[in-house]
Length: 183
Image (cartoon, rainbow, N blue to C red; front, side):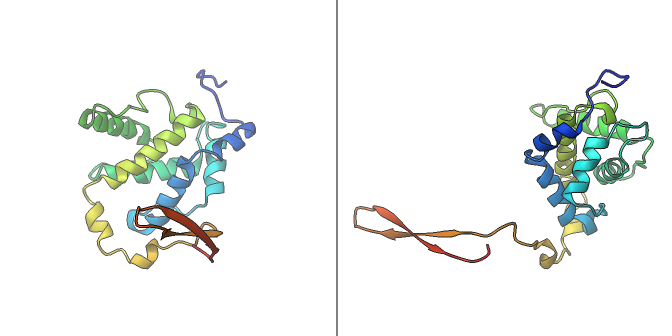
């Protein structure tokens, strides 16, 4: 427990955090739109480490702070978001988004982001990535994006390719399988 009564992340949480779908989603978002949105260059392991160590000192994880600042700044053009005021702007952003869509949960009403439970931090970061795609400048920033920059290396190998064959006029299908290469 921290002095503020919130739970901190521990190294024992690593297996849990690696099973959360939001982490690769956040990392992939930042990788795809790094140039267009002026985001940081990091890999998923660095993001995991930043999340697990955030809140261990008074300054917070530099990676999480800077990433959040850049995402929030992109959502709020005309505002000067920095490491000292980003949490205030983040609260205002969530409040505004929840007023626009009353079905949306306000994930960041109060408290210090550094000391929130690990799961909540990940949910907030993922939501801010979504908010960034809703910003007014997105179309202008992405219209000149090269399609090759959106291509990433394959995530794995496809072992079996399924092909449907019509076996009768009644519409019954069977599945034949054959080995293929990379996705």
